[in-house]
Image (cartoon, helix red, strand yellow):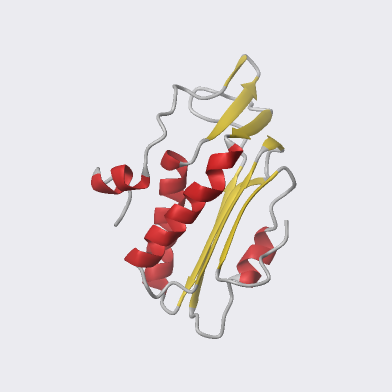
Length: 163
């Protein structure tokens, strides 16, 4: 997964390990005083599921990039000082301890970088059609319950993510 040669937004979906350090480095710019990197890491448990051994992600791939683009566009309109945005997500099997999702936001000041990063990950989780399967010692599931994919405006209007 390579960063874009131009532009200030790097979006991607990959079956390969995510380039967390490279994404943070790419987001650096002389005009930025803050780079916030969020790396969602596969863990060995979840609610009521001890000893998770496998995590696997599946996506409706044709919809991922357009939705990532819409999230980035909304973030930039909400926090106009944002310089660069990275949103990368894994598909396929993800080993425990590996990054499943990376969000990086750079801006001149930390408040906007933190707020926009939180907005990007929270909105991604509720608006982008990516599903997680877990396998643990006594079962497996593609999630605790079916996920209703929402539109970005719907999530913002309902106050589910920061504005």
